[in-house]
Length: 377
Image (cartoon, rainbow, N blue to C red; front, top):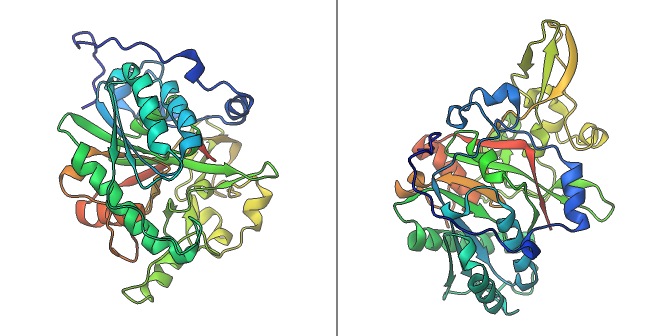
């Protein structure tokens, strides 16, 4: 349980990370200036619904222990930045336990991770490294994101995630926070944003910056089904693996579900009942309208209501699939048996298979925050 009254809680004093581990370069300043982060944590209209924040988004009163899990492989040059992101987190560091699973690196990732662990250990509850022994399967010369390699790669990654859970998930942990090692920018209060949704599985909007400076969806494993996508999937054979990011999609990615609300003449904000249906062109694979609106669907207010203005909203969007860029999962779901399937489950594996399994078997709801922005390398 997340508590609001901290007066009787015994606190462990942990020093702040060294200043040279806090992000402060020009790219980070661009990130801070470019994005307005909105969720129930910061959206005043939604904040009243978040009881465990005591209706005060400026009060950090989170007491739950969180397990941060990150698989690492050949990310030696990214690890210092990864720890810089962790050092920037405003969630109490005495509640953060970090576990890295090193997987068959050939670039001295393990050596770098060990040195950083030893240096930064005093600034978190704990930092641990698990050297994995199975090793990654041979890619046959294919690069990481080649479609032909995805089934083998992601089945292996499923096993890695499950091993991390089995070796690290102690009873004290209320949440598991999955974070990619090669994430470039995260909000300092990203954990608080995710917790503010008050659901068992929550993710954020993971983008990447193209060479021309434009932003696009990075995590294409995070999506909402449509009638068209479900109809297409129902026609596939049982052994068909559905992969996103390798052609037109009939689904909505989280960035397509960026929320707006419309403030009517009485000053009341009414949310769009179904953001997806507000732009059917997207479901039919027509991305022109999205490109003309800076990546966001062009949503129009209901014709039945007179409106004064369109306002941004931090309202969460319900999802059917998730990726592992940034992902918060209630630890009790894993204790009940939720895994990352290394086998096909409803045409999906790994994080997407986990999402399908969570909804179908455990009755969990999954939400994403379209206006909490993560930037990937």
